Length: 192
Image 1 (cartoon, rainbow, N blue to C red):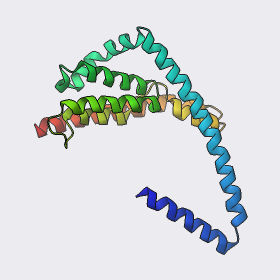
Image 2 (image 1 turned 180 degrees about the vertical axis):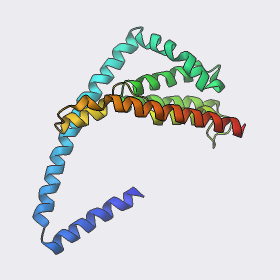
Image 3 (image 1 turned 120 degrees about the vertical axis):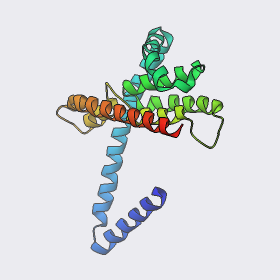
Image 4 (image 1 turned 90 degrees about the vertical axis):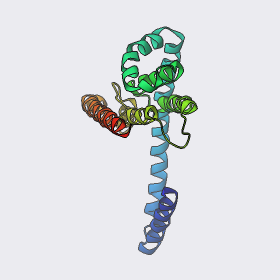
């Protein structure tokens, strides 16, 4: 749907610019936007490289194993259907750690890997399992301690205090996570 809407909006904007005689303003806007996009991309690239490097260092040390063990009771409670699937639980834990650290871009491949592992055990391939539904909810709520992407955006836009959003992000993501988990657990029990 968006691949239809965006070109329509762009074409309408150019037509309006031609009719109203504002083609120069449209051209200036395009080049300013390109410059801002490149600057924002470079900020994101630096942030992603930093955190992916930290995740790689954590993988090579025992820190990831310790964090995974710390999350184990929580993962066992949320995903009771995965009792014997240690690989899926470890991938879910890695995704949760990446989200907690605010590494949304690094969390995505880990989440896809966890979904593929859970799909292997799924008896109904065209329907999400309970564990997959819970994982989607948990991943979407994305409880974060360090919202690196938002801080990077605020920094690139010259915010006076880019880290001032940390406490509101904690509150919002924790509430979203708890509500999502609660509703999913209730609905899963009703369906069974």
